[in-house]
Image 1: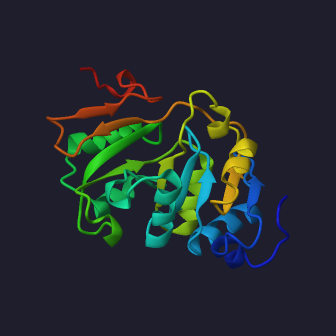
Image 2: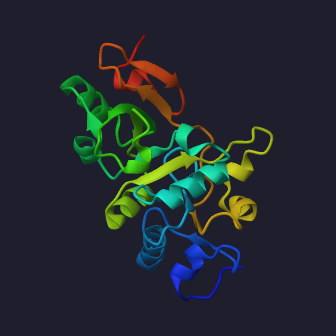
Length: 230
């Protein structure tokens, strides 16, 4: 049951007091009032589940330490050992968050993004303080309207990690209504854009430079399509 309209801050900060919400948003023509509601929730420190061009993921404002810690608790991981990605509207953020991005590295990312790839880069000192224990960070620019418009209107990247995938019950990771049933007491909003994918992004480590590229995980993104053949 979707809660009545009211103070979204209440919806986002008092998990145990009320029922949280699922919002159906059309990916090709997103309803502005729903987008505004999700963005306000993120600004208030909320945690959402939202679609990408690969799988549904947990997300929050990257600058909100408590929200990042909430995601880690939901995922069951240590915040200091977590591998949350930085989901952005475009590649502009690497000028702030990354060190030593060479022209060949940038061209590779430009060829791949937006798309189903995560690139690991050397982190700069400008990355949010709660990530500064990490020497690297992952950047994602999803080929999907919802993360793009959320980042654009929020004005910050989204700290994100994929939902846990149960191979025996994949529908609990890609069907928004079932996702809502499972996570309704742990997150503030589930963004429903229809059934999502089950293939995660391809993860490519560029943190050691273009001469030492490492493929951490082959996922939905094709290596051949971006000219990476080993």
